[in-house]
Amino acid sequence: MANSKRDLFLKRRLRVRNKLRKMAAGRPRLSVHRSNKNISVQLIDDLEGRTLAAASTMEKDLGLIGKNNVEAASKIGATIAERAKAAGVESVYFDRGGFLFHGKIKALADAAREGGLKF
Image 1 (cartoon, helix red, strand yellow):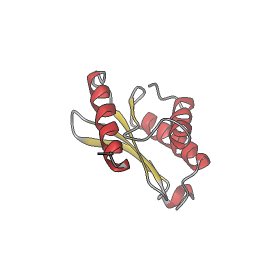
Image 2 (image 1 turned 90 degrees about the vertical axis):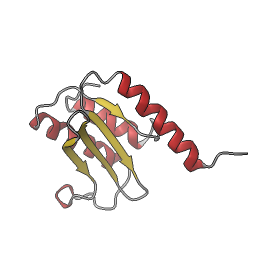
Image 3 (image 1 turned 180 degrees about the horizontal axis):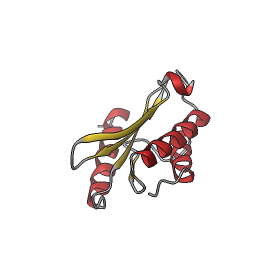
Image 4 (image 1 turned 180 degrees about the vertical axis):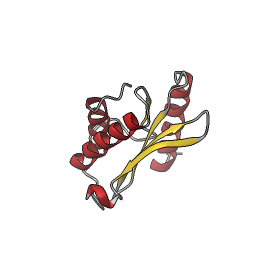
């Protein structure tokens, strides 16, 4: 029986997250979510179970509402890097979820790295 796209996505997400948890070493997790209309990212401290910083195209201040393209993703990456530095975080581990590392996800990661986050 063939797996559906959703089943493959969920399987990939669990595989990626479990591998990353082994290498976490107490660092916060930079979790990415991409929908058809928006892209959002959170900096999560799994030890305390709280969000340290977040950025999304749904924020009015950024002027990217309803945009989900490479330019928007790179702007979100730069924004989360600034907010992470303000929260006192320099080193994270990148949780791409079940999304493939190319296009928008890669642009977000590259912009976050240029902004000073290490992963």
